[in-house]
Image 1: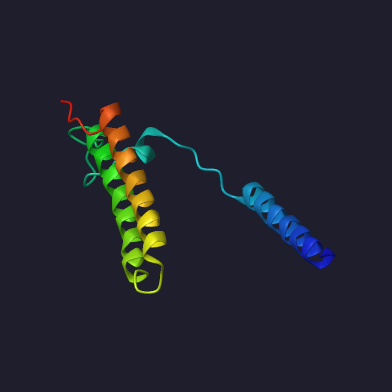
Image 2: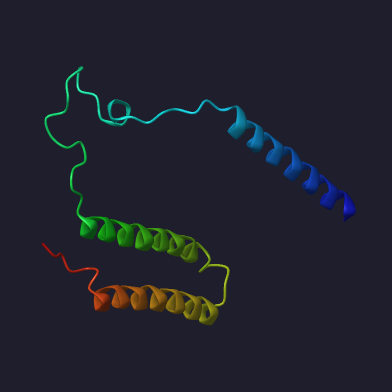
Length: 117
């Protein structure tokens, strides 16, 4: 047990020394307007490089990803139907689907699914 502690301590010390040395020896850059602005063939940009992004689209995309990952968790549940007890299988699957439906209801109730202009 002590060997794991000492190994972890040595790794922590070495990584801390490396990070401190990297921050001390790194070349400090001076941020001016020309270096932080976007480059368009040597000319100043005609318009802003940052386009407005709809936060509502981002929220719906994140909700889709969350439910998509949860649906992929349901696929192995189908494969376990052959080797598990039917009552246990039904209770686990209904519990999981209930969690999904409660999450969807919560998002709908909070208004995250409404597209606002």
